[in-house]
Image (cartoon, rainbow, N blue to C red):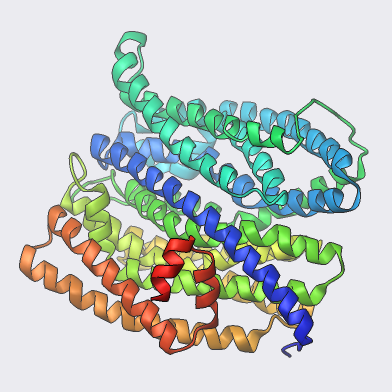
Length: 551
């Protein structure tokens, strides 16, 4: 049943939702720079090394510790830490909140530091588990183990950076932590190139080893960038240890299930890397599929970070404050509007990336050792990943809502179930179809969408509704506008292909026209269809852009 709220309460919750969207807008702008920098980083790697054994080994070696980055920075740590920290900051004062920060930081150094050491020791078994097919190419498995060991300390640095992000977000500071990942990308690629190609020959580092050490340097910069803002908010880290502290114990109790609850997609990507390592491509042989999947998933991270992660990070402190003050109606309305904004932004992104998959991959990656064949294979994986984009982004909002309600069990059970289903589906797919690496991406998307629908149904029952009628109406309108936009963009793209061909420069020429035309059509149709979240999203734009759109 859809709840009804008084006019005054609706106005108050609308103000909270508008604040969430404005905060998400700030984060989206910063994350846009970060994701673009990340794509530049990936482009440099792919064009320098191509879809080769070195790139496959690097991608797997980076993905293992990077799994923890996604869990800590965009999942478990934020979901467990931010509601508890907000409760302390709101109800017990800044001094108690600062003590909690120190206790959690010390715990991370001890626990994650030990995890890093273990990861370095067991790297051969980790690579064996997720890339055993690398044995088909001499030296590929050994290189992956070596690169994994170099990059594992990145895990501790990014865990501490994620805690800093949570503190700043809870203090309504969103821009600085959002820019942190931008500086990670800039520092990692610049340091990697310097170590690999300038200093490397003199100190005995190969180019790919230099890129691996660049990842560690980028993690350090990502943490240090946030330290001045933490001090400005009155938080200076000091080692402290009190395992009986109720706040620390509460976060620790949430963290285990939260890690499992946030891990499904990333674990599924690792599982798919394992299966992809066995694929023998007719052109590339045993090299290529892992890199193609990695590049496609990296590109999907652009809209996911801009919209899903940004909205989720801005929503979590707001719904945590609503629960702290006992305002469940505000919680429901804020959650519903946040989901509406996520769908407004991700549904057209999904269709646009599907239609323009070849163009975006060619314009971004193609060149040097990354050929047109690699572009086509990566584009097919991207098309399949985008099927689950909206569900993946919505899960970024739903999971923290469960944790704010002090329910970490539900996301954990759904996540574990999805991992089992994905493993079985991927195994069957490779055994009985010829879809190859693209089919692995499609399996991940379908499982992700299913996980979202299950968690949404459970949460709706748990809190007595999420204004589902309004949300359903909005999704239908946005879907209609997105499909119409996709048809227009397809015609535009085909026109450019007929005129200029399907090479890299043709893709670079057609993309701006297709994207601008698609955005204009989508915006106009949303206005015609009276999509309510459109005005909320516009309010998050900088004032000059708001004036331009108003015209």
